[in-house]
Length: 152
Image (cartoon, rainbow, N blue to C red; front, side, top):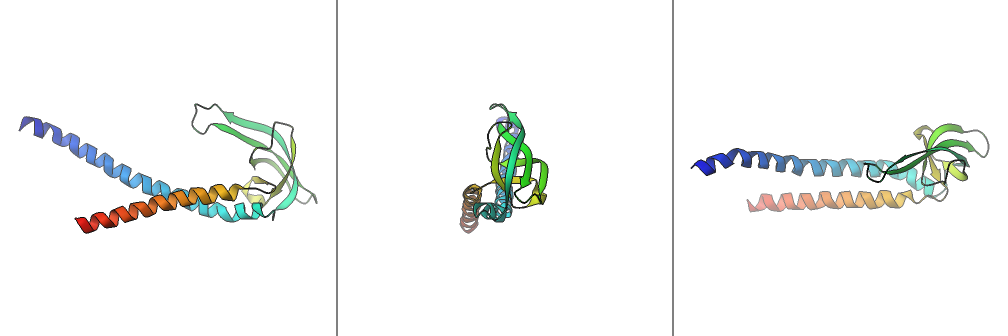
């Protein structure tokens, strides 16, 4: 009796942890799927070069070491449309435009987003891939849930 009674609180704690994890992953997958879907229209517009064309000048990069969470570099700078009707300062470039001082052709699909896209952007591929992975995981979870409900 002593050893079984002593393990019961630990089993309850382990079961509670399993429940938290079993809810966290589907919620995260739903959030990721939602973000991928929400960004897809802008990504498709950028792929078709539907944005206002212009130039982007890299003014600074924000880089994190590889061992830190979110490692890599984000490029920021100034965008001016070819017809000079749109001028944005301190915006983020989606992709890798090069080093500080680089001037690259770019486009802005949504001036309010603060994000500048590459010409002929392929960002939509990542949105679709991430969305499919999240949707596949959610479908797998639903199938497992339905089959476990039938079994027991």
